[in-house]
Length: 274
Length: 274
DNA sequence: CGTGATATTGATTCCACTCAATATGAGTGG
DNA sequence: CCACTCATATTGAGTGGAATCAATATCACG
Image 1 (cartoon, each protein chain N blue to C red):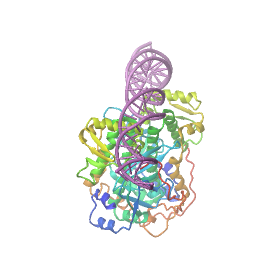
Image 2: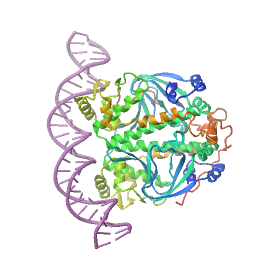
Image 3: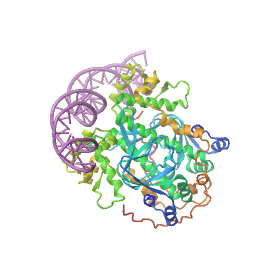
Image 4: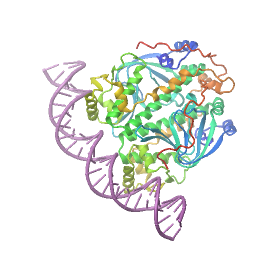
């Protein structure tokens, strides 16, 4: 649940309690089920408890591009906290379970704990970093490097929950899904898997992956786990976060009074000049 | 300065005043100058007042991938607000001026106005959306579509500040920069420009772009400005009054969204997926 | 008037795509 | 258990879009 991912940010005494007191709704979901569509109104945070999901952009020519994959423990819908509108289509790749937390309960959580705020921000950061890394893969790496990088990333993310036995895991993406994620054709995904297998780096059967040589795989992919873990480390070391000084400390925790903003419609200022 | 971008989010009476009272340091910067490097500690928000900048990832083989471009009015360093560490290398593409706001002063701002909080979040959102769209370009579009899309995006972003005369503007990216942004070679950028010019869509001389036929260019690129503007529209329409009670009131700009999106159809499924 | 950064053009190569023909299972029902 | 189907995966042949290599152009600038 949410607790898990938050645990990565070294949360303390009261916060755990607070987390556990949050109301949520656990839901069973099936492979292929939509969690939401672009444009839907967003009123809740989703935590994947079991199964894999993904977000994607669908193009006018019928093809699609996977933007992110979501693993157990991942939190979805952070970005929509303030905009209130879903930005991408999100669906499940497998059967699973998701926990739904209404935004209002999340707000109370965030109000109470600045560590939780940081945690959510860090997660949003990670998603951004993964997206950037995917761009690098698609733009600059060849098929083998790209696929190898993706596998390294999956392995690294799973490490958190399956510290033992990471080198053999279920990768519930079809070759079609992988192709959509990496900007390749299914045919070439197949060939590339063969190539990696030939080099003794991986083995794959159905949806079961075996990473035979993580070391060499990471080398070939120019994989550096930094982008996945750096923020985590930061938060682990700096317990209260560096800027716990006056103004920062007041940010969000209390906010007892706000600038009584009456809905003044006066707004559009001409923004000419350069 | 900051006021400009914030004006896009319909801010009111007191907030403008507050913005203007913020202390900041204006700095001259020159083309090629680093604004910061990955790993630097982050203590300030940067607003580009003049000139263009970009963030990039540098690969071990010496090549680089542009992750984002920054135009006048753009705000950099939002993501680092809570992590305190810069995540990418950022440099200037041209001479220009930047305003630096220390995080502590930003915190006071955010504390005072929830509309400002939303604004910053929205901007972070936009950056994420542009990154996703770039991924789509690189992964799914061919050279002409990709370049056309990039040009449409630039045009759309500039519209905000040069409402007149957007169709002829300075595009201070060399073909090398464009290649690094779009995952192509410089040679092919050149050829692709020629192709677009042949079709009477654009004209380019040195760093001066002329969009001859924005309509057709957008069509060819499958360009939809939605991802750049949707959040903006949301904040502009929803009057920032809060449903008074809970903690949410202190957080949200309020959004009284009644499912304006499509009624989440319960039955349809992702097209291609297991 | 050189010099160096930037851009154009041609020739060639190659990685990955497309098309097409099987394989391999998993699931279903007779 | 077998026959059928459908989704998924593999393999081959042919093609093409973009990369690379290389030779100029063009132009800003000292």
